[in-house]
Image: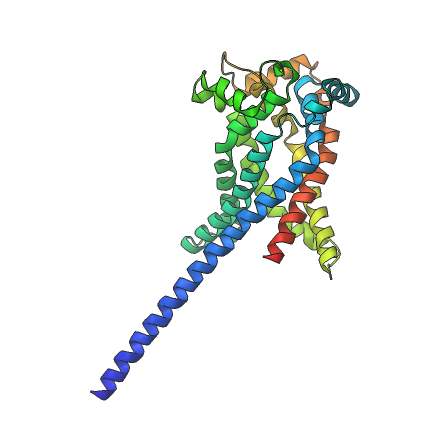
Length: 300
């Protein structure tokens, strides 16, 4: 009897210890996941605050196919008061999007690795696509940003709230104009970003200090951002055209692409107008994002 009692007590203690370990592990996973969301949010905020004027110049080139000098001239003509016009939607959209991008990627990766026997490459790729697809829920912010940055709508919209209110009259579908190119862009770009981030950093000189790690993370993020920005540039051109329209027919992605292709004399160089500025902006933007994200991740 004493032996049975002792054995029963040991089993109970083991059960309590195991249960406690599971609770602790679950808590650690939740805290770790929250950390990724927070770091992504802060990284996006830092980036948008610094690079927004460059983005406006790029947007004008994408939408109208004008040269860099003409796009800069348009902003000068708009005046300093309008330089940060349209900042709120990308600030809200990008901070939330990058929080979801990094956080959901970690959550989906952990979930798939725990519940499937698929190779890590497959689970990480699927997680990246799922995270990118989830980000597309925030399309209305990109939609309103496009309208506020287009000088043709300056007289119609004075702020973000007004733009959202006007679109409401056209129905919920109007908020999601341009959703298809966003879906085409988000999934594959996430797969490439998360898949290549590690290998690229391994090719860089070994970092032995915080500052060296910061530089490597900036270079890694910048190179990836520039490459992906150039690769998906035509898709963003089509997205900008689709989202600059208010009301009327919802034209398909191929139809809008062909319309732009014909307007720009069927020349690839004209389709990529603004790509060189986007390349340099992406180096800065994604360098800031990746370096800030990794730096905060180490601090927390």
